[in-house]
Length: 227
Image (cartoon, rainbow, N blue to C red; front, top):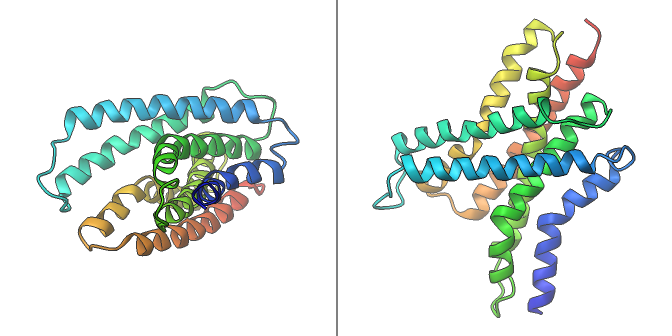
């Protein structure tokens, strides 16, 4: 039963990444190299963030929400945006379209994040003797992160790769990207300040990811139309 539970949780956490790659044109255009490069950039970015967090943040005395500390986390979190910019603009990609490029980068980025942050807890905890919903919720959270990362990559491609965007949409694109970049701090506020339980936070993340995906898709489609 424990092995079965572990396999279910592992598939829920990592399976959607594989399904997305296989079910979309990414597999037809052999963009796995782009995803691997993006994953490597994420790992480097995560290392830089870890050093910054360990150096600049103080150890909290309790689990309460500290606005100053959270603001500093937001600033450090923008290192992800720098890494995503590098992955989208500076890496050598195959001759693929902008549409496939941001998907491949976002997929590799999200998969690396799931492996780095969720594989070890899943391996240690989901094989325990006692059943818990924690790792199922963790898998759902990974799915929300996948959708948000793809949305952020789509908006990033509009900001940094698409030159002839409609001017009226530019502020909306930047505002949505800023909202996605600060989502970890928003969920942290919900957990610690408003004391939301994990199921409620995960539900918020799932709904938010779907809403932001819809908005990002609409913006991306609008910016692809001839001006």
